[in-house]
Image 1 (cartoon, rainbow, N blue to C red):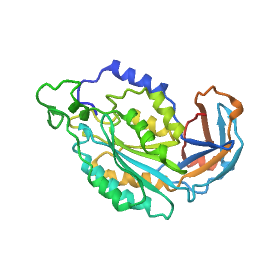
Image 2 (image 1 turned 90 degrees about the vertical axis):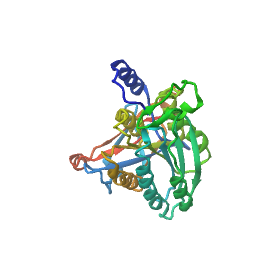
Image 3 (image 1 turned 135 degrees about the vertical axis):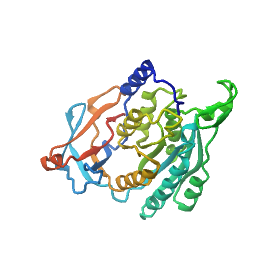
Length: 326
């Protein structure tokens, strides 16, 4: 969350440097193999079915990899954390995001697989309203209980009264620590999750004003936990600077998710439906672990390309983690 002020070129340049220096991934490395979740959508955002292993070329640090298997996701469980920004920039849009999230839950939990959902809110730190559970009614109650947290002196519409001190505990509700909060989700929720795909549905303006953790460290933790971030960028643009689309795209795309930007509140249900379709139609790509390539603990660049000319003509977009970490 950031209040509406004249934009600083220096600040934007600094943010750009941070984003460009970050790396991310979501993949599991077990028994000498790497399993990566891969999504495929056409120009209209519709999931693409029928892709085969021979349609792809996989490289790690530019070196071709031997694909061991490639198949639809099947019955592998989904562990989804619905992560709602409740800082001041979300005051007016929060009821709409709650409604859209409420519609998403039944679809995620009605497939017969061992899917589960958690509900988390955040400003400068997270508040776990509900841990991972398959109880749809409990998830919906948790979403309905989400409340905007006004900071000290805030009277609405981006306006403060008085002169609250920056270190006032009440001011923390007006700040946003996206990086720190994502890592807290890894610590508090995914560290206890079982096998399956791990997903964060991040609903925020993506403007980080108070994280202490550096972006590259946060990305490394996300990739180690195998977490894909699906970002829904929304904010009150009347009183605040709007959505940081660059942040939302990078944190989503580098972890194997996708970022969506509803133009108005009424577009939120369609955005959440898009997330649902992509989550339930992903593929699992498995290849031999590139252990012999070294890397010294640094992220290794992963690239998956379409080599099927017909699919390339259709403008198929692949979503996958863009790095691996050992």
